[in-house]
Image (cartoon, rainbow, N blue to C red; front, side, top):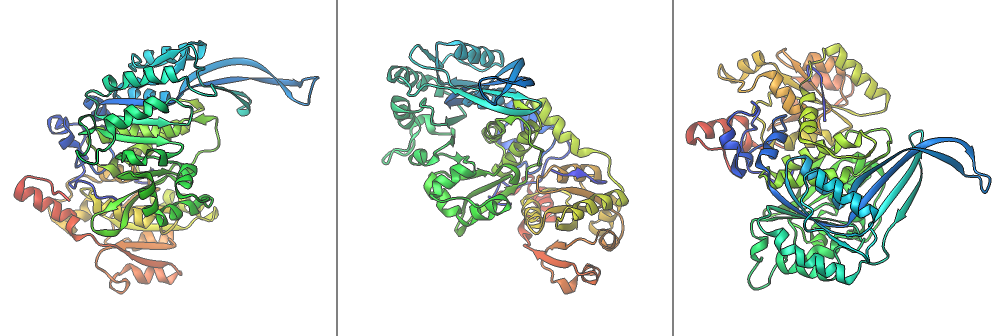
Length: 543
């Protein structure tokens, strides 16, 4: 996500981004109305809540305990600190946290799980019910122990974690859960399977899931699966490959398990995932795989039509100093699910999910992202623009940190897949991406009196909300050469059917040793082509 400074991958259903706000509710009140939404905007979380899709979450429940206190001495029995507990907090975790996040974002959530007839199970059900989650399909069983994870901390540092869990889920309890699933699935827009290896998805439960959601070699998918999004969030996603889910969301460790190999560390993980995209799709059985990579963001992969190379889409996280945060992955899966269930394109849904995860990762403990919090987060990208000199100070700070600066520029008037794909490519040329937007007056000079469609403040806000963009600025000069001279980016990126020799900016960049890179040109998705299609047919183009 970018800070405003005066501030693709899988094919989406194409069309201009709706940047003007929450007007035109009638067209946006359906999946078709959201199917063409390319950019993020602050009205979008509210629209998802209005859609209120029915989502069934089936999986392993966890109760997260956060005990915080002070340390003044060590115990006599061993060299261990004595924590005087001052505060005890509990929050639903695991599949229950996914359900909590879905409810907080406006989904109509049905939760299916197995808990014990113990204090942990009672606390879990009370908190879920208070949040508006339907827990009528949760089975409480005397032979089950509710998985509880107690974290003991002091001074912001977790000292110890105590786990209390059943060694095995009782077969009778699993049969009761299995009996509850058909009713819970009825009328669902989406189903999320949260399999963390605690046993709630074993035995009879797994059999019923495959019976109602798995493919039939002769008749295709059963009725319950038709028009239902199936998302698998599992420690061992390969166990669900024959279900052929629509989405699988492994983290780096889980993706490594799918590949049967170890992942490299740090920034090398994303290229590694992309290099093994075919294998990840094959071993997961999913139509699309979204690999979450913590501080490196995410990489989405899916088949790319007739091309042998899968299509990809990257997001970048907003790095945060280590905190006692837990469950950001659950928030990500929840936001991705409600967005897809409401009809948003996959890449826009992933961008929104990244934004939601960015909200909770800045808070200690296990927390959820609400509709209002996500909207407020997205509104933050419409801040007052920085001056050139202020932007230059930001860039100089990045440079002192050893980061590679990439600059690109353009009108970016009506956002479409050509733009998002191009900006994703530009980001991968370095560490920090600065986007310079043509001012309204310069767009009119370049494109004509009826342009821009969206004013520069709106264009800046939409571009800044893309996770690949770090800073946005607006320039009013005939070329960005004065900005190039000021910032001296390591790479100047340009999209189109140019060569470096054709650009006025090349001499300015090469004068201080910078590099000019020409990126892919997507003529069929140009803004002009989009607008001409709308004017001639009244419809947004489809891919």
